[in-house]
Image (cartoon, rainbow over all chains, first blue to last red; front, top):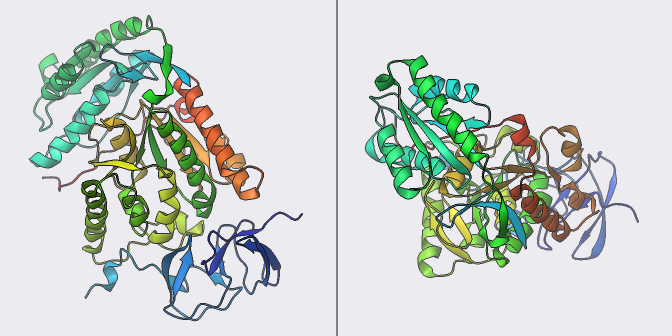
Length: 98
Length: 387
């Protein structure tokens, strides 16, 4: 069996974490709650970085480990790289205080 | 389960038998270095503090220094002061001696000795005797429950939360179940994950203290009026795939395993309870490590994704790589590879057991890579401005 190239931590997560450098156009296989999923990547995903496994609308929570890790700052399609360019954390945001 | 340790007369157990040369103020660093360079078998550190500090801040600095001098891994200590500073070497030495009446403690005050060379001679003569006396001590079998583990993550990447920290958490659970103590720290790296640790508190008081400690830290970051990101998570964390402090924290909290939280204590406060403890420390790797050691951790396990060489001068610091690529690239520095969890070659539980086995071996005398490199990293967490 092919080694898993991406890991989804909990079933409510809307991102997976790549455990290898994965190129755009690659169809990545991973499991969610034991079920096999295949997804076409639309961006290059570096080792350790996240990609959306479902569409995430702007301002919606990005979920990893079954918990919110921030919110999308734009609409994100499934298969897109999710990182500081299109999501922001919600904690420790002194820049958002009036 | 047992390891071979040094049984001190007060019942505490050390896993090393250091003769420590300790400057209590920045001005004494060079003399401390000179003493240590002249006596093979001593360890020393330097720091930038000890003077021009307001009372509560000075007390915290003193607490860290006393904690190192009174530490069970330390056979004897040379306390080096200048003579005019705020954190007085005389008081630090007296407090160490009060806590550990059996421990050789030598005070060297540069101004009293009459300058640097005379101070180095006085300190080196005392250290020389201590190293000879320390060499007569033998290790004895000790129950693994005597271990107090400091857990740490630094230079984290996305694999830290997937592999290394969960494996360390598994080892933490094993140690707690054996009757030992495990310390979780790094308060900013619990922001976003506080409920995961707080809801395991043994009572309401501990639970509230947990939430309040983390909230206070976040408030201090927000008061600066900037996004924490870039300061914590760091640029290296971000390159490694971590996008927010919450994501980092959710990966970090795994280090604490799953056992109940017994107490919440201050930076460098003496660890007195068994089980899982949370110590309030900054995320800064060195200040965190220093606080945990000062509190009494005889051993530390430090996970890293980007790779860091650091280690305490007196507490062996085992490095666990979160990914195989970095483990293979930084072989000078990494003791254990947890990257096998990422590739599916080992389970979290298997790596957790390997970490515990390594802890027992290091406790019995096996050297860590950081020790062989001579790391003596020491950092004081300042809580007030310098005057």
